[in-house]
Structures are given as structure tokens and as C-alpha cells.
Amino acid sequence: MHSFIPTPIALTIAGSDSGGGAGIQADLKTFSALGVFGCSAIASLTAQNTLGVQGVLPIPPAFVQQQIHSVMSDINVGAIKSGMLATAEIIAAVAESLSAYPQIPFVLDPVMVATSGDRLLAEDAIQTLIEKLLPLATLVTPNLHEAAVLLNSSTAQNLAEMQSQGEKILSLGARAVLMKGGHTDGEDATDLLITTAGVEAFSAPRLHTKNTHGTGCTLASAIAAGLAKQLSLSDSVKQAKDYLHQALVHSEKLHIGQGSGPVHHFYSFY
Image (cartoon, rainbow, N blue to C red; front, side):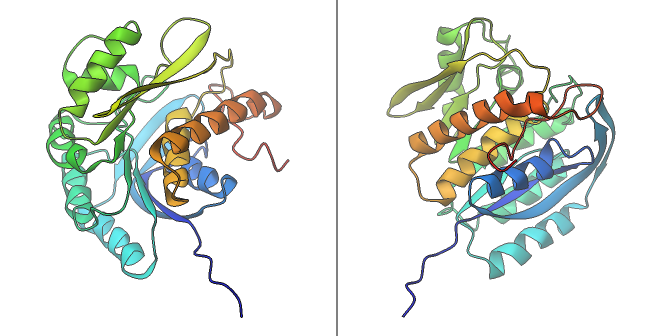
């Protein structure tokens, strides 16, 4: 008799990146590379490439919900990750859908500003994200710019300020916050995992590469992949950080586009 081993499955709710380096495309590549089956609900379409975002077309909120319901009603999803949600209406719709699944780990990547500097979230949407979606999150993963927007404050300049801002975001209702230090200065890029139990630091040597398109999406998806495999939050973050570091190291082998190229999601396969 065959023993039944459940397949680890993760769902991403995010925007499509026509250039293939970020968004839904990065999420599904990350899940696959880490041995997790990926499902998706597309919240917006973008026209973008390595040079930036040229256009955004939001999907009607009811249809975003229909995609989520189709997946969740049939497939045994072990973790959920959200990325670019574009509008207040889409954020509210996603929050309404996810509130039915409090037992499933949910990683919220509060995508507001692309690596290229393009704004990806309308002003009124930020308040909706804070009030409706953030309290549902197992983990929220802001970069320093996004943390500053969430708190309506200046950007953290050092680890002490990162910790202070992370604790403030935690008080908004998330169960854990990963403050990403990729935009700080220094030899190492240090991320801080902040929970009610305390603070854990994850450091990796800073890499000097222009191939950083999709790093935030990739990290959040890699954490969700770990949670789908029933790893602890801390182990999921560590695995994700290691995976992203290697994907950045190997990105130099890819020659894609004229701007900020993607990380190499499948470095271990080719």
C-alpha cells in the first residue's frame, strides 16, 4: 500500500508581470524551485519589463474573489501569499475572502513601490491594507520604503530604527513582521524578524548586482513555500533568505532585458 504524502501547495494572489521577473511569475517560479505546487489568483495585469512599469490594469474585485474561491474550494492550500493588489477595492475583496481561512498561514508582501521606483498602490488603498488585510497576516514583509509608508514616517536608517518601526507595524495587528534591510548601507543586508516573542536577525553578504527585479516577491513566496511545507516561521525565513541570496548570486548568468534584470529562480536546475 502506498503511504499518502500530502503535496505542499501554496496560493499567490498578486499582479502579473509581463516581463516574467516579478509578481505572479516570480511567485510560481519560487514555489516550483522549492518543491511546492503553486496556484494563483491574478489581481492585476501589468505591462512591464526590466526598465519599469508601463501600465497597470486591475482585475474586477469579484473576479479576484472567484479565483480565490475556485482554488480554495477544491485544493488543499497550505500557505497563501499576497503581492501587488493595486486598489482599495481589490484589497478589501481579498481580505473578505481570506478571513474565511484563519488557520492557513498568510504572508502579506505590502507591495507599494516597485524596485524601479514606480508607485504600485493608490493612496486610499494603503489605509484599507492597514485596516483590513494586515490584521489577517501571519507575516508582513515590508522593505524600508514600504514600512515608512505604512507608518507615515521617515525611512529607517539603522537596525534600531528598523526594529522600532517593525514593532509599530506589529502593533497594527500582524502576527509577525520581517523588516527587510536590503535598502540599507553596509557590507551585510540584515533582515529583522519581529514577533511578540522578540527579534531575530538574518544577515547575508550584500551583493552588488543590478539584477534585483522581483526580489521582494521572491522572498515572500519562498517564506510561504516554507510554511506550506510546515516549517516554522523562523526556518521558513532562513530558507527563503538563503534561496534568494543564491538566486541573486546566479543572476549574473542570465542576460535578460536592458534594465534591472530578474534573479535566477532555477539556478539549481540549469
